[in-house]
Image 1 (tube, rainbow, N blue to C red):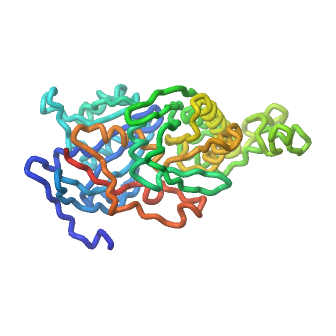
Image 2 (cartoon, one colour; image 1 turned 30 degrees about the vertical axis):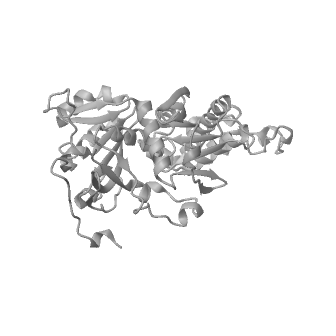
Length: 405
């Protein structure tokens, strides 16, 4: 039934008003700000510039033990360099005015919003000045793991592999979820070994990540935004710039060591021998070469860490991925090649919002729960259409419940 045909009824116990359910959390990274907020009002679902499009909300009902608020989590992102756009978005939606969580040891006139990421410290005064709110900082690693674990446990179609241009969604056995390696690709890359609920360790990382791609890409292509650079890379041909095994080996594979003729032997290697200047190369070819170089190295380093700890399952998150075929293909090929097919690279549909979801869940009186009666709609295109982009579909909001404990 179309939820828009139903009258939304709001029911809550006297001591559990809607204002007690906090509905906004932030992950403020070096490159991007990720916003997660909860809504029960259809007014919150109207598309606006700067926000992911959202679907209708689904109402409120009373549970056996606690009030259960039914609605949707919504997702939006902004470049950190344009933080004022984020502030304006929050202000225009009045997201900072409702559902504040008061800590008992703080003055009750202090409005706190949960936030994670380095920017929660850096921009704390700005949020206070512009919106009159205090950012209550949560540990970044705690939030990443909490967000990933919730998604993997709550949604059957959250994780998927990507090989040969096709997605294959993976059913995660809840009894066999741990251990796994979580690779979060933000401005830099963190690699976290997760052994169980609240049991994890950051085991490695690399400074060559999304910030490297965006920074070098901006210098080399003059792109004005991260999304523009990603789109540019999608149209490029890295073989114009990258030196392949076949270029060295007379067009032949190096089968003895398992290298095909199309394997990249040296990223940007052809720029050494070609008598060309930067302006002689197409920006899209540069962008794709850069994307593949960084993606492959992240995939290889991830495998080495998984190998060290005997992990067969690697989940990749972070906004660097953004459902881009070249990114996922390169990471998958790297993991598959170096592990000799024993390890799998898996991606998450809500990959960029792990930290923000974890921050949202850290409110003392919030408890997210997947409503089994309202599954995320499934379509054949999920597994069959390699061009399916969850950023443009149901990824932008998810049905959920918030239990007011």
